[in-house]
Structure formats: C-alpha cells, structure tokens
Amino acid sequence: MGGLNRRELALAALAAGCASGRGAAPDLIVHGGPIYTGVEAAPRVEAVRIRNGRFAVAGSLSEARADGRGAREVDLHGAAAFPGFTDSHVHLAGVGMAAMVLDLVGVASVAELQQRLSDYARAHPDGAIYGRGWIETHWPERRFPNRADLDAVVAGRPVFLERVDGHAAVVNSAALALGGVGADTRDPEGGAIERDASGAATGMLIDNAMALVQSRLPAPTPAMLREALLRGARIYAARGWTGVSNMSTSLAEAQLFEDFARAGELPLRADLYLTQEESGIVMQRGPYGEGQVRVRGVKLYMDGALGSRGAALLAPYSDAPTGGLLVTPLDQLRAFLARARAARVQIATHAIGDRANRLVLDAYRDAFADDPAALRAARWRIEHAQVIAPEDIPRFAAQGVIASMQPSHAISDLHFAPARLGPDRLAGAYAWRALLDSGASLAAGSDAPVEKGDPLIEFYAACHRHDLSGFAAENWGLEQAVSRAEALAMLTRGGAYATFAEAGRGAIAPGLRADLSAFSADLMAADPAAIPGAQAVLTVCDGRVTYLGL
Image (cartoon, rainbow, N blue to C red):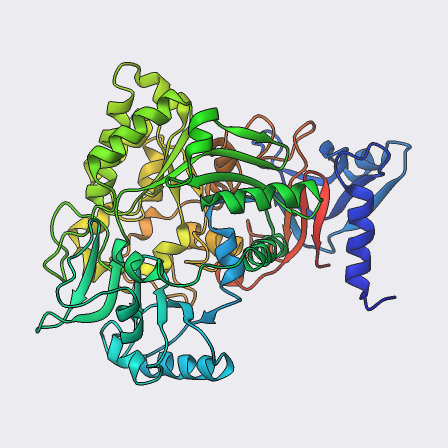
C-alpha cells in the first residue's frame, strides 16, 4: 500500500471524508470514552456527532447515531476527549527549526555542551553553527558558558548558541569578530554584552545584544522556513493542539501560513501576531484574514527573560546587582500603542518582570485614558505576566487586560527563580490563582520552543505546579495552582476569548466549530504524575481529523 501503515491509512481516510467545507462528506461520530464539554450545564457526554465542521450532537451515543445518514465512527477505546486545546503563545517555525539545528535541550554541563557542539561540527563541517536550548541553572559549573568554552571546540567558524528562553546567547570568538564586538563596543539599548574583569566580552550576549552577531549570520532560506513551519504544525497536531496564537510572526511566515491553509496542508487554526518591524500591513489595514488563518495584531517586547536576568524588576535581582533591561524604550512603546489603537489592532506585549508588567499596564491604561471601556473591548494582552507586584494583580481584571501565561514556565523556573527573586517577590510569581480570583481572563500557552509545547505538560503544570520529577519546594506557591476545570478552561475557552472566537469555539456544544483533543489519560481524574506521560490519540480541527493515534 505504498508504504502507508494502518494508522496512516485510517487517518488518510478520515481526513478525506471529514474535511470541513465539503458538503457531501459523511458525518463523524466520536465515542468510546469520557467526553468533557467545557459546558457547565452538561459537563460530560457519551458521544459527539460532527457535521460540516461543527458539532451537530453532544449527548448519548444513541442520539449521535439517531440521524439516518451514514457516518464514520472513531472509538476512543477509553481515551478521554476535550474541547480543542489552543496554545496561546507559540513560535511554530521555531518548533520545527529546533529539529533542524544543534539541539542543546537537556545539556547537563559545559562539558556536555562542548561534546554536542563537537559532534555537530564534525557532522556539519561547513559554515556557521547555530544551536539552541541550553540552560545553565542545573550545571555543576554554576555559570554561563563563555567564548573560551566554545573556542576550545570550534574556533575557525562562527558559533551562536541560544539559551532556551531565546533572550541570551553564547558565541565564540569568531562570531564576536564577525559582529565587530570588542572591548570598546558599547551595550546596545535594551541589551548587554557580558564582560570579564578586564572588560573583554565573555561571549554572552543578552537580549538586544544578540543582534550584533545574529544579524551577520546567514538567515534561514525560504525552503528552510517552509520546512520548519510545516514540520512545527504537524508536530503540534500530533500533540493534540487544534489552534495556536503564533507570536513574533514575520511576513514570510504569515504568507506560508496562508499558503498551507489554501492548499489544505495546515492541520490547525492560526491567529498571527506580527513582529513590530514587519507590522506595517496590519497597522495600515487592521486585522485581516479568514478561515484558518487570521492576522490579529502585533507582538511587542517590554523586557527580557528571568533566567538571563533581563526581566525588568522594580528592585534589583536578589542574586545580582542589576534590575534587568527594558528592551523597548517606553516612549516608543507608547507611541506605537497610540497608532495600534487607531488601527484597531490587538497588541500582545512581552512582560516578565514586575517593573515591566507595571509599565505595560500603565501604558495600556494611558492609551485608552479617554475611554477605559474600549481597552476591555480591544482585548490587549500581556504575554507571560510572570512576576507581578501583588498590588498590580487586580489591574488585569480592572483594565480588561488578558494575562497570556505559560504554566510550564513555573515548573521549569522553580529551580532558579527563588534565587533570582528572593522570597518576598515569589507571592506574585506565576500567580494564576490570584489572577483568576481577581476576575482576570487567562489564556494558557507554552512559549515553545522555549518549552516543549506539549498540552499535557501545560495542563499538569497549571493544576499541579510540580516539576516533571514531582518536585516542588515548600515556598513555590503551590496555592497558586488551579483546579483541573480551570486548567482546561485556560487551554480552551481562554484561548478562544483571547482571539475574539469565544462565540464559536472553546467548548463542545451543538453549533460550535468542531475542535476536539483526545488523550490516552483522563485529565480530569488521572493521578497528576500520569498526565505528562500520556499521549494524544485524536485531534480534530474544524471537523477535520488532523491526527489519529488510536
């Protein structure tokens, strides 16, 4: 059969018969396991029937089968189904690209980083080397890597190795020379060149300083970008995601999203937020697009990341004499917000530190000073909202600002954030419970490839708040965990609301768009430890089966 296995044949048959927009396609019935609807009046049903991309029936199996017309059926064999999961903050091309460059995720020491670099350099003997994914917080060396570490392995060509958070990189001497970075090079605005006692660059570049080197390296070719984006989308469908808010999207990526959707190759729904540098088209015409792909707005940056001490704090870090970085000058941010309001463009601003969150809340408020209710209607977002001064937490609900948060950050950061922040600031860190109790709207995502991009890990982190080994220190704010129902809402209804789609998506009910995610574990009843190791078994987007793992 041309090399297709049974699972691939079944998926091909279902996809051919269930594609939305094909009026003659037979209906799809899903049953055989608990189906959680996200609807309070009917939280669990036995079966659903999907017709023309929408839920036609959500009830008993007999009700789903009552229509005399033929239907294809999928038996879950005990797996549990939910409204389609939406990743409200992802860099999808980065997810695919991570599989195409030097993978440093999980590196446990400087020595292991050097070994992986050495192995990669031998396998790829020409050109600059790009890698990403390292994080030093567990390393026995207790320090950032430096240019000497890289020079000892690769000295003759540029090496650029991005930290997992995307807000810092270590480069070798050849890369520093390529970027013209020397002892006399001044720190760019919103960035920092780490230096040793003599003033020489160590090779660590923070936030905007990365561009000094990165801008001189070869950019991904159009073919590479196409492969990365399509690979990332397929990975995401196979993990159970039905939709994404894709952040910092270039115009080239936006065009690829549209091309894939038009060709029937895009397995999920995508709401795009353009980079500030390439935002001219949406600022001129306002939000645009239809069907699977819509350009909603623009992604801005206020500060850096906590791990690399670029997050902007109200007081200095507890483990270093710095308060972080403002990546975008405040006057420039405010001027852009005024233009965005006039263009009715949705804004999503990266803010991690408590100072950055306060500044963004202030700037949003002031942009709508003449009509505060219009800010709520605009649904402007703060991405990450990671560390918030307790007195600022109620402002999200009061101003109508969406907190777009990534639960997995809390279980990744718990090993270093207490040292960065100190005990007093932890009360406002990753504060999902406090934000929900204040009435704020939360949308959950992953920030992949910073994190893995697994909906099961995000759900687990939100409701359990322990790392994947089951560890959480006593001071790690376990009271900020949310219930399983709230975690589900953050990953379904929350994402729909954040993209103005709550009237048509985010739950399982007749008339709504048929987005459905099914997993091998019952997320509402399973032992928390069993959730991250479960698997997606069925993904349905707009009535179309995009992944079948049964």
